[in-house]
Image: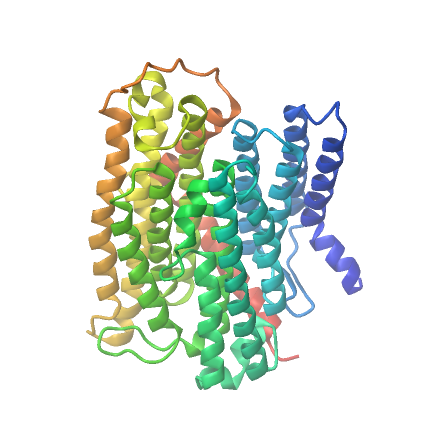
Length: 505
């Protein structure tokens, strides 16, 4: 089978999503169909389920054009997660304040999902850039979708300008990497002799690429866009930015650093720092944890609190990337998926509160336990999980991140403190985060509403899926192996496939 036929076969899920997006857009052109949001949403869900089914029907592994398109167990699992997160976002959008041009809104969600899936399913520098831009450009439009809202327009402009700068950094960094190594394949980078010598140009390329990714995942000092974008964007748009794009971004960052540049990592161990990407990641991660948690303390808008929380969570994930080997990658993938589920659920609650009470300030959540006890309980689950309190999934995710980072250095540095300094910072400021998560829960469960009580809305799909997400977060806390074991198995098999593909031919 030639390369073109293989591409059509193994990119069939992405092709189905593209076709679904076109069908939804065409349906939106007809005046008789455009108002029927349920029909448009059903088409979107049907296309997403079909794309997921194709991932099951094609269980084979593939490495096409030397890493241009890759399909392995880890990629398949992440693509499933991306499709699920995007479909839940579409369901939330159906019950949100997005009223006009709903077909176009759903189409942009699908196009952004295609970019995320391409990003997750490649090991080529050029395709990484293409996937990132295919993810980002629809998100810029989704951020500014409420065109009559000045906050939405401002958020879109900031996101677009910062995204353009980050794309420039990333592309220039990738071009330097290509110039030094002579290849765009991550597998080739791992085998290139010059990748072990910390060539100044190579080091500059890696650092610039990390700056580009730092913007994408909202890590300090590249985080300034996040609070305004989360607050000004339509809530479903902010949910997709906080969940799906972060899953894809951290997966490709893990592939690039831990596989492609494993021999140029340097050291971030206390007293034994050496040039490489590890000390850069350590400094950025520590700053993200400190700044994100401290800045969240003074916020009065729940969406801004979640934005600064996302910055701090990025710091924890960067710490996980510093753990050596498969354990570090597994801990990051597990945590980023758990975080995505939790944050998506939290934004679902925010969306419902906005619909019922007209805003997302803290006072809008007062007395929620009286008017919507189920919704209040779900918000409690999400906040406690983000804070890392047992028995919810967030606790195990953070524990696995910290344990992996600590265990990866104890056997290497023989008595040296290793990454313990970073773990101390992360644990200390995770304690700080308890304050603002509990402030939200105080308004939800303790402070009565000053306004007239709002009657509960009829049960809708958004509230149903918020409940399902809360149950998933609770269940993964009790039995994390349900997600962790498939991730570990997928990474093990993916490593074998990548090693076989990278072998000299």
